[in-house]
Length: 218
Length: 114
Image 1 (cartoon, each protein chain N blue to C red):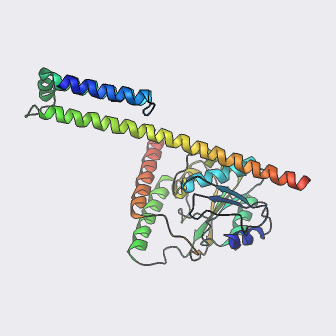
Image 2: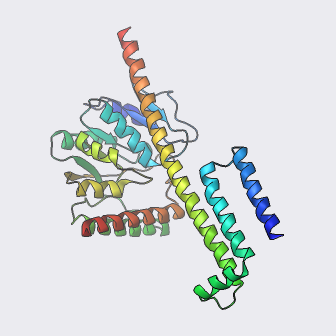
Image 3: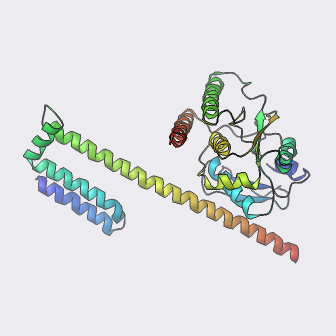
């Protein structure tokens, strides 16, 4: 964690690093973290949606112009942060997504099932948004401006919120840009997407899709 | 005996409310369920009517199905209450996190000004 924070804090233009500890065991401590890093620990594991809300609320309460969200397991390349942030700061887009060029390279039944689920979600998302969502809508590496953050702040984000965030952004006419990145190896921890949670995710995504479809038909 | 069981259940419910182990709003629907099932089990004509309306050939089955229906309604209602409680919980956690971060900002600016 300290290594990732150091590499982010040393990047040009980075004003603040915020760590949202989603009830991890053992908890993240301030030990070894660079000075000025903000750390907030949630009392229990609430999921990425709430973590995003915490970060978005903090971003909107300050004066920064770009918020970059990154996983703390080392999978997202920190050196790509300036590229994503610049795309937003340069007004090329409201939301820049790190599109993983090497996603789905893994084999095995679990990976194949995950790939199939991702393909299904992408297909439905493209149908709902007339193809406006980027190729990788499950990516958790993205940068946004204040306008995009204000849109997400109002939306109740749940666990694994990325696909619905992309769809909502697209339907609210936010400009989305896919920035190709190469995802690294997970340095620690493991995926929280179990078979049960994958079904839950699919159910929620389908409910959202049906809701949006009804809204469109009205 | 049926009346005794009904009174016992209602008394148990009131005890839970009195001890504040059960919220009064939730107890209302449980009380309603007890009353409905009591009426259904006490009145044979009600069972026969329900069986004929629902086209159930074996009449006693009507009360079992009615009990299952009431149970399903209660579970749904409890799920709605739980969902609302979860939303409140999330909103509170979000608010507490915002306050904590604001405090960290204040602490930093205070230490910089000293």
